[in-house]
Length: 294
Image (cartoon, rainbow, N blue to C red):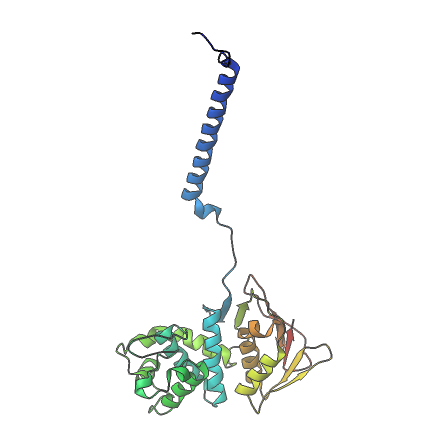
């Protein structure tokens, strides 16, 4: 073959280099595909361990159960409203059992027919307006108003008492939540000390006014709040049971007020961002409950 003035014979070395480059690219492609396949088929072995989700845990005897942060907040309001009304812990148990079944302790803006809120109350049935029912404090209060009108609610079967209030199409469903409801009610009313732990990954700044307002709502006459020289909040209570109710409700509301640690009677607890920290023994403090914020 004749070559013109602008043509040149093929360079064997260039051709060999190109072939080597193609081979390298092909090998890399095979290697990458193998890695992707390995990850896809062994992903469970390569997952990075993470701590529990943000929320709270309660332990009573050998039983443990958890709530998400949203559920925890709603549980604290339901129990707080029962305390504010001077009702026994059993009332809080019945309310929690009911809210577990009706909404899974979530403040739903939808439901069957016109039902909304924690207890799936219906405006058309006289429970209030949608706006009112979507306020957890209001809806819990309306539940208790109906509860105390049920004959024998203090001693009756919890499932049946809840059904008497709700008149559900599934009257037997409340019983399945009784153990969970009892555990949270017992701890949050102060009858099960050192039973709760929470995880906070948000780490909001200190908000002492939040705790002060919450305490004033739940215990307007029996709990007082002062500030120590170090900035900690000192809470004086009328009983050890109240002290534990204050402390464990404060744990749940800790994210909103920038909680770092607290002490109740002779036990102390510090918030963690990745594990459910345990309560630890402590020397007596300056007040029945001491709350330290960021």
